[in-house]
Amino acid sequence: MKAVHFGAGNIGRGFVGLLLHEGGYELVFSDVAAPLVDAINAASEYTVHEVGEDSRDTVVTGFRAINSATHPDEVIEEIAGANVLTTAVGPTILKFVAPHVVAALALRDPSSPPLQIMACENAINATDLLRDEVAALAGDAWDALAGRAVFANTAVDRIVPAQPAGGGIDVTVEPFFEWAIERHPFGDDPPTIPGAHFVDDLAPYIERKLFTVNTGHAATAYFGAAAGDETIADALADEATAARVAATLEETSALLVAKHGLDPTELAAYRATILRRFQNPALPDTVWRVGRQPLRKLSRNERFVGPAAEAAERGLSVDSLLAAMGAALAFEDAEDEQSVQLQQLLREQDAASVTASVTGLDESHPLFARVEAVVAARQAELA
Picture 1: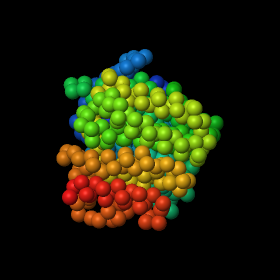
Picture 2: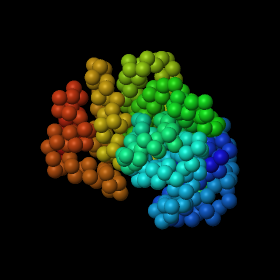
Picture 3: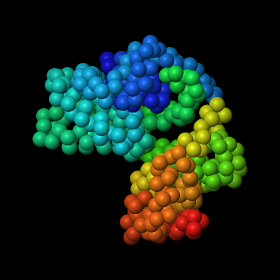
Picture 4: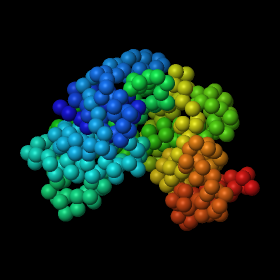
């Protein structure tokens, strides 16, 4: 069995690739970073180091890497003969994966089992995004190619912090992970992925993860940066910051209860687990790494505006989510392009324009005016 994985970074090697390896797949990484591709091909194994409680080391073997920028034909050939294709590249990069998939499906033996495709991204229904890109590129040929692949959405969760210097291609991760996958696209032939679980309805898993782990992680970073903390663990050691993060997640949990009927007691336990994970002293993640790309994190379907908009539509509290958005608006990092762009927007445009362009909210939405007030408050600080 063979799996092609786009994105040979820390998540690719330390989470998705690791589980595929444990499932018995030959691993082919595809990436555009030439030094990383060369380092992978120069190694016969790498180690995934779990740090914290119940930690262990796992050695990964049976892999190779291809530079998809310089050798696209090789990547296409590998995909054409693969069983599984996964990604961990970021939702905005999926459009660059799609051409390789289209070309590979055209080469694939029609009698072979369908290629099993899963986009493992921090986004809702990311695999659907990839399928739409593939279908659009294929055009009139899609009807003939569609049966050669199945697309399943997933929800993935594992904290992989910035890696220690000199670690080579080894990866340090937390022990906890979750990989939930839609069951129905695979019929009676699901992929072999130890530790993953297949579910009939993925939506609650995706939103529970995004609106707890992602929202909580980013909120900790932005509240922590505002308080002058350097690491995520330091931020949560501050009782005031920890209380702000907890209040934010109580609001997202209230939405999950109202929308999906999730059990409040189980959600409270889940929140507690997430916050303990963030405080793992063996994962010295910085508020600057976690807080980067604030424009993306403040966009319409992301971790703040997404749940806040749905909560506002239901008349639920969003005060703490708005406070987190305010902290994100105040996040200044000269080394992060989006942070610089955001501060420039705040200085050059009026509050309504910034709110519309950054959040994607319509002016008639019940959340719009409240976010606009938060934007205006940040602009007053800058003035």
